[in-house]
Length: 492
Ligand SMILES: Cc1cc2nc3c(=O)[nH]c(=O)nc-3n(C[C@H](O)[C@H](O)[C@H](O)COP(=O)(O)OP(=O)(O)OC[C@H]3O[C@@H](n4cnc5c(N)ncnc54)[C@H](O)[C@@H]3O)c2cc1C
Image (cartoon, rainbow, N blue to C red; front, side, top):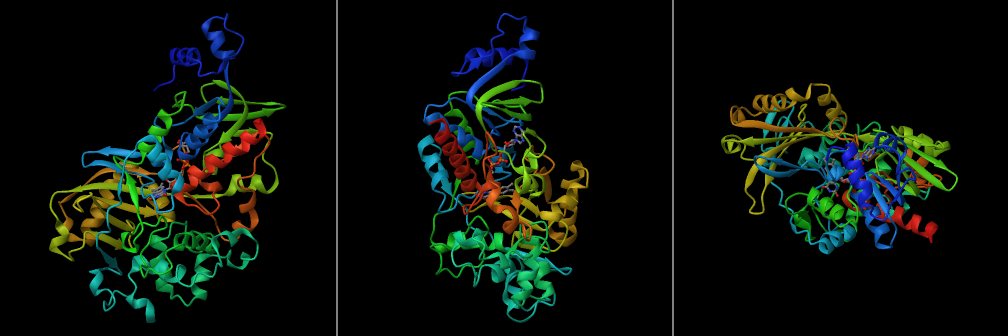
């Protein structure tokens, strides 16, 4: 919905239990300049975290206004409608422990489907196209010793998941593990990794690069995944736990994850205000004034910031954040992922190594096969993480799709003329959140993990980056719940 004076008047008339500033007799333009809507709480950001904060607050009888910068609901749960069907540009897999996300889906009548199984993935490394079964003996394989039997895409798990030194997942911030808050590169080298293993792992690990990413934060995620899964031999789990082979239930939202966010928004009393980027949050005495880019003003007793720090640092917050928390908001790393969705006209992989997915050490990093519930491949998805994603962002968006298709054609000639790019989505470039995920760099867990979720004056912090032990979608949902409970305690 485009925001106009008319919709402003319509929304304020609708009320939602909200108050209109005492200027109703002024002509419309004067009213626009001076009027404000009020509610107990203003939530900034209509992603999973903000929506769950709003739902929890409303459930206890508090009035809430949700302000969203984008023209759609759901932030990083975005689903794209493409000719090959709906595809998730962001959060997709619902892990076995995602209690809140699963509960929300059940309560709101949103269907979940089993997550599709993995499709075999071959390799293009050191200039050679190699089937996974031939990897260990290939001359392209320049790893050493026990590493040689590990597929390039599983190298990170080989070194990070096995013999995880964290005693339990909650210990990651207790100070006793600070010696692990070093770069992933240093940690892996300490475990005996070769330089080549490091180079291969850098492709899959969702950090800027291995010389900066914190080993401790990564070990925390893997420890969380390992709960209850100690006995599995599977070394190919993703950070979100997408693997059907360990007997746990992994799901997705039918029709795309955005359907869950939309159902959450639909369950709110008021509608989420789209196209309302917040520019300032002013906290004075007993109240908060939130102003959006077009000058609209909202008053509340408390405010929830449910945007990543990559977006929060662009909002003027008064009084300013202080000390370590200020440093964390200003300097937290928020990494990027670029995804290129593609269609294919013929199963070209049958003409070379027989595996539709491809791990590569090139600029296009990885290509996954998109599969439906029947396991049929209906499209392809190039996935580029971290610094490599920022490098792709340096190209004009309109050429990135062709660049990926051409690169695939060079390294996999069988694909030439059979693949077409449908959509390029860079989370840094094409979202108000400006990121794919929060990334701790070495030393930052020790320095500021304990202040990231601390309330600041009347501002309570939610969003995936404030997580403790949960991950992804569940972390976002949990953070919204936490921020709502903090405010409920204060409102009484
Ligand atoms: C490529 C990718 C794959 C992923 N895969 C998975 C997965 O398989 N499983 C999993 O569990 N998780 C996954 N995730 C992570 C998961 O999607 C996120 O952790 C979660 O959706 C974050 O929710 P959030 O509410 O914290 O943030 P967001 O969804 O980013 O919500 C923040 C909202 O704030 C809005 N906003 C920003 N600035 C302003 C402003 N100034 N004013 C108003 N609004 C503003 C944004 O537009 C956005 O809607 C993935 C993420 C990505 C990007």
